[in-house]
Amino acid sequence: MILSWLAVVIVCGQVPLHASDWQVGVARIDITPAKKIWLAGYASRTKPAEGTTHPLWAKALVFKDERGNRAAIVTTDLIGLTRELSDAVSARVARETGMTRKQILLNSSHTHCSPVVRGCAPLAYDFTSEQQQDVDHYAKVLEEKLVKVIVSASRSLKPAQLSYSEDQASFAMNRRGRINPDGPVDHTVPVLKISDPAGKLQAILFGYACHNTTLAFFEYCGDYA
Image (cartoon, rainbow, N blue to C red; front, side):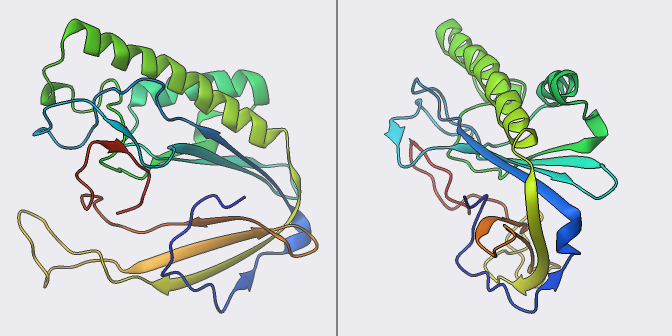
């Protein structure tokens, strides 16, 4: 199962990370809202979502090293996550798995084709009471699903091979205050590859600094940038 992917990435010059010392658990869960609620990111939007281009996902990796240290990395196809939600999820995960808050990293791709998350940019939208109820309900569902995906990954730990590489992607641009093609920008794409002991790909985790404002339709969509 691929955690995330980017077509421009070429995994080359990989550095193995003492493969026999690691265990990794992988899980994912669909976080697409059941209802067509308001989309996040653009304050100029005038109506809720109209449909789904493809599902939104939360995906989790849980790592365990030879000393028993564990860490969870979670990616979400969302505009962002509030501290309130992150802390609530982490507290529940701690009770079920023993991992503390500092062992859990919750990340969002910042896609502008995801639903409003309660507490993120709350002044950007003037909701009716019914629309606010939909946002509040989704926040509860999202919390449940994030807990579930992390716990699932933590319970599926298996021996794994890890390797690390870096490459470049050039589509990001500095836009501090305006479009600024000569401004500083980080084009590095760090890539962590997770395979099983036989070498079969299990997940790829990557990072890239880009503000995801390419798509502007009224559809749920996790397409990156």
